[in-house]
Image (cartoon, rainbow, N blue to C red):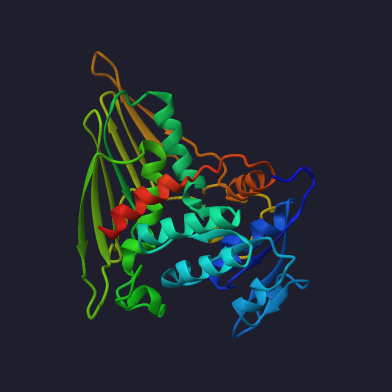
Length: 341
């Protein structure tokens, strides 16, 4: 626990690819409690174009040897998360680790034990909890307008009918394939709402020509009171379906995946720009309710403004005051047990 309320934590990124450029650097740079000091760039030095004062190290070892850096973002390929998280903890750093946290629950438990031994904190980068569209889902559930929930469907679809260039996603190595790529997003959203399922059933598929890894998955999760949740993702969906479909005794809610942050940041928009995090007009979710007489009412549900800044604020508050971080170790273990099964 830090007693200085104005403490600024110096941070470093282990990579400056798309995730570093879009999901981490803008938010660390914008949060008053962090100072983004350094990044690792093994080949092309691109970070200086956006952050002229940033140190660009040639290796992870160089960054970890920087004694001023207190928080390290582990945003390297999935199969290297365990190795790099362990190295960062051993170097005396707090860590924020992208999804999937590790390939297995056994690896996760090793890191938890190590973090406790060295007195450092682990944070899980599950940013989709802060998507604007998911905020709509939580708002509708909290309203009670659906009545008792019967079923919920979450989808995250793409159309990519080729083998991608990122080999850590396409080779048959640990934590590869679509399940480990998008599964952590969907499962974390479900677990954040309902906790650990009573049971689950998982189906994987390989549909692209010459694929070595799964490019389709569907998981059915059973919860108390006959609540069934289905998470599905495919890389071969030409016409994407609704991302969120909820059915209850007195209503249904349908919402597309419409959070705008990633698209806006890729286009060069800043967090301070007018309209950042606001969904395009016409993106409202549709809530349909029915009364005791069978009369149906349609209601458009606008989303809150999307922002991943609260995730970084939660990291900051936990570092500063030991405040509880919203994504818990138990949440991650529940997720990994499903992924690795």
